[in-house]
Image (cartoon, rainbow, N blue to C red; front, top):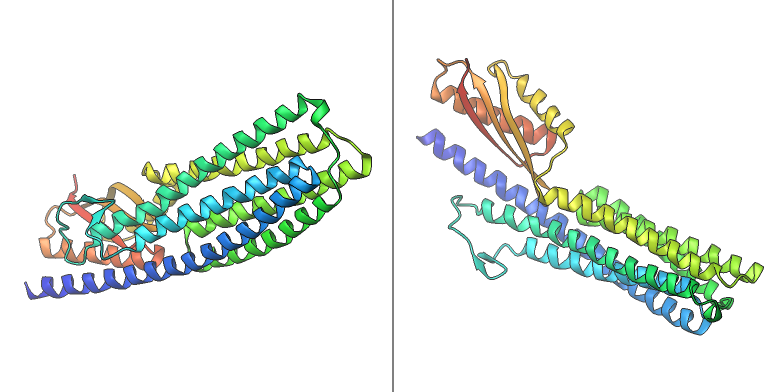
Length: 325
């Protein structure tokens, strides 16, 4: 009984350490997202103003694209805020059943899902903005009388946006890898596509000015919309798969192979990994010697959990042992 109590205390201490590491990562991600909001705001204001005075639909489309960056960053900040709110005993005002773990692990793992929820909403917003920009581009092409060559000043807006977005992408990519944070990784993908879009905007405006082609501006705005749409669909797909409890079968196979290496494990019968935000948990059923004592099977489960935590960073592995044969 004393060993069990000591083990529970060690488990709780391990979870508290894991929780603090994740919260520290979330605080770091939050700081970077504030930088994102500021950068996107500056770019959007500059591009909207220059698009109006320079009569460029492509630059206007790029401004809308960067406006989606503001919205997505704010949504991700909300998701991270909820995930970090460890002093809240409910979710969005809804009470939860009493947490069976003294450390509050169940509730915190549930909170971590909100980062993914708001990442998915970001994808939906980007898809909606892409549809709006695409509609404007088609409308422009159907009314040739409204088409005109953009003014040279619009090149400045596209150039400024390109430089700033490349800087934001580099910061997000570096921080995403360091913090292993899905929100920053999604933000990095978004900012890279935004930088590419700004480069395309600059090329399109330059081409329209060089060749005095009136329809090129409208076509380029539709290509910008296509970039936004592609990024939105990708982010929505990845986050929705996460929320649907999908996990890469190849990675699960690696987990199973690691557990099967234990001499006392005769077979891995079932294995299911789960994402909780950026945190991975694992449920596994193993077949063992029918005559194995309860104490030995318990120790085996603890050894498996320690190895999975050390090798793969899995914060919690629930092991169920059943008699083989």
